[in-house]
Image: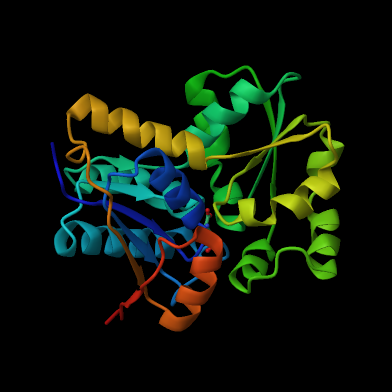
Length: 267
Ligand code: DGL
């Protein structure tokens, strides 16, 4: 048994989709969520800089919050830094890219999967590498969706503007004849209805959140590091941006577990 919390981080609100799945699957686990809203969005920034941000946050989670595991609930940060974080820390570090690919591969029937993500994630080639290393017999059509994250961070999920943008940005995956669309950015599940409207009924949307939570559970079981049974998990939220905004929108997105937000300032 290990009663230390699990650390989860993202550039902002996106990782709350993963946190939600973890809270539902592992209600006894304590969680510390770090949203780097003071420095978001990560997607358009150089991967070197995102890697540095990911290292800084992981250090805060490990050294100040004494977490037993880190979940990089951000595709851009995982694409930039996952291997390095695993090398630098003794605790398990879980990303969202492999779990997302596993979920999409089990769903597709025609073997054609679309992947949408930030400019940083798509440009990194991380999804192609993940598919290759799993030897999955699928064909990917990957496309970046710049602008989607900003709509989510503004709390705007169903406007005419986001619909128009989605029609333009999703054209390549529609043309690719995909039957499965992997939401390769943890912010995108909040836009799922708009994305589904554009993609049509035949295309199944897949997010990495549930599969990532399953992976966390499997590791806790394998290592015997689960929280003592019977207790209800405590959930802490930290934001490097405006705390009141994080609290208001975060609560709308995650639910009642988000009842307080602590501020964090980078030096
Ligand atoms: N949620 C993040 C991801 O999964 C990135 C959002 C951003 O900051 O651009 O890639």
